[in-house]
Amino acid sequence: MIDLHSALVLTHVVAMLGLFSTLTIEGLAVRFLRRAITYEQAREWAQLWALLPVLGAPSILLSLASGIYLATILGTWSAHWAAVAVPTMVIVAIAGGVTAPGRNRVRAAIATNSGPLPKAVQAEIRRPVYSISFITRTALLSGLVVDMVIKPDGAVGMMSVFGLLGLVCGARRWRRE
Image (cartoon, rainbow, N blue to C red; front, side, top):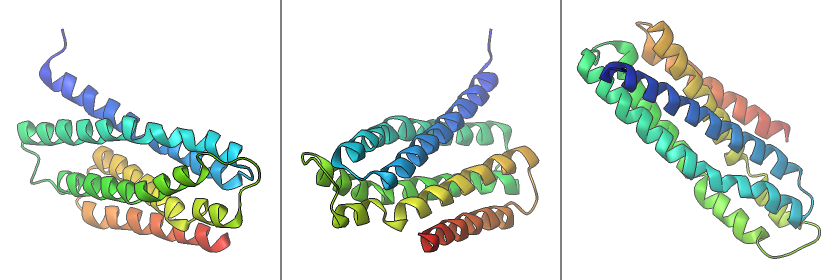
């Protein structure tokens, strides 16, 4: 029989897997949407965006709830590594939510037409906010995994480096395009 602690750790790990799965789906959708040259291609890849809130929202909520409960019952809130987890998850949720209105605009723009995508729609699909948000969130969640495994004393500095690295990589990708 599984005890409460083991069930919470398992829930926490599964929720993080859900978050990384959400990022993978989003990354594929963004990558192939940017290559779309017709409305039909764009609609096909934009359909993946419907999975993001369905998978991502429960994953982030479960990860936060199980992590907060584990930190509380284990009494680890005073540890540096635990203190950065909740703010990082909130930042990740906000950064993901920032792209939702743009995704909705793209879906509306490609909903019914057929044929080649006009330049204005291509420009909306290729807005840098999608890549910057995706890369930054990937870096932050990766940093959080490193934080949870290594448990460094300088967790705030480490997470700052991961976040900055994500922003820089996202900005470089935007400039290249």
